[in-house]
Amino acid sequence: MIRINLISGPRNISTALMYSFAQRPDTRVLDEPYYAVYLLRTGVPHPAREAIILNLPQTEEKADEMIFGHPASYAVLFIKNMAHHMEVLDHEVKDGLINVFLIRDPRLVIASYSRIIDRPVMRDLGIEYQYRLFSRLLKLTSAPPIVIDSGLLLRSPASVLRQLCAGTHIHFLPEMLTWEPGPKSYDGIWAPHWYGNVHKSEGFTALDSAPRTVPDHLMPLCEESMSFYQKLLPFALKPQD
Image 1 (cartoon, rainbow, N blue to C red):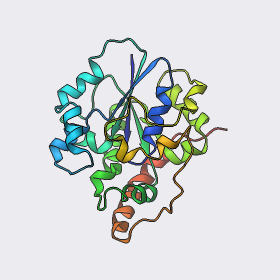
Image 2 (image 1 turned 30 degrees about the vertical axis):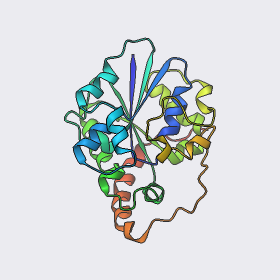
Image 3 (image 1 turned 90 degrees about the vertical axis):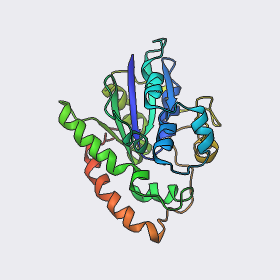
Image 4 (image 1 turned 45 degrees about the vertical axis):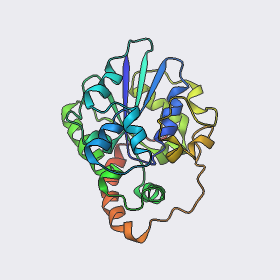
């Protein structure tokens, strides 16, 4: 079985990428299996906190079982993980996973995220941790881990997805480019709070046309985040069409 571990920041179109992989008949998807572990270890007051804790594994070991313990009745397992969820794990680098980093311009991330969480901190955005983990994996492997920039993915979905599939040793399927709008059975229980825009989507298109303005009190965070983003961006898959 091929296990693809998406390591994303929030508001990075990670759910759209999960929907893309869910269209494959050979693939099962998991939506943020370490979310309850993160909430319990940090105490942060996220929307639907208690429901998430009750409905997901509460220990890292139990969440690992969701990833590594299932019978191999499918060829591919796509795990959508948030970087800040992984940061609190005892074993953040796990054998048997193909790690894929999903990044996005911090100005867009913060403008979107701050509509739900008023005062995010660096851990919430995940970009510093993504850079640190990427740098660590770069020393452990002979080839750089895969990096996807959401802006480049939206610009040329077919080209970037073809490269992603090649890098994860699976065939690209055209059905990965579209899906039916609306909630999905594999959505996390937090979907009503976070997935409103992606539920309107039918593919990789930007639906949220609200102004992308970073609040003044978050500008220092934005500037700090941008430095890590700019270090990762050169590694991102580039459209080839």
